[in-house]
Length: 131
Image (cartoon, rainbow, N blue to C red; front, side):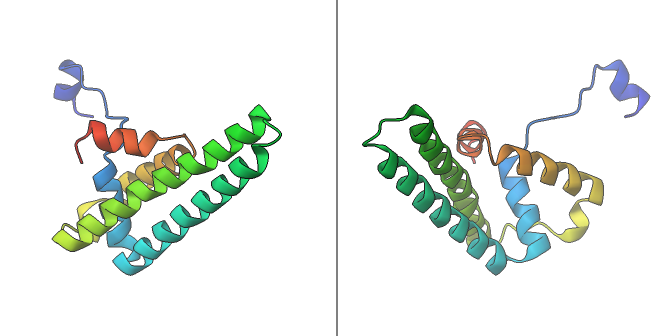
């Protein structure tokens, strides 16, 4: 941070730009791999969530229902990434590896890994950011 930024009350962003995160992921790992990864994660989370939710419904246990909803919301997080990856690949909006340094990529990756488990965070961020 420069002294000018400090004088103006500059604070670094802590909100992840969802589209940038997916763009970096596509650039670093390849479009085909990322699309397959997000598709499999979406399907797997939806299947596990549905199974847990519907298998636990007769008992009516709150913890079982919450676990099912948790997995379904993780599937929605992954579905958001899948749709953005498809849009990025379709429109040729890929980032170049040289566009971001390792520190930025590392920070985004750590935030994303932690936030992927927070229910509905990425769909809500995508709507908020009008992605």
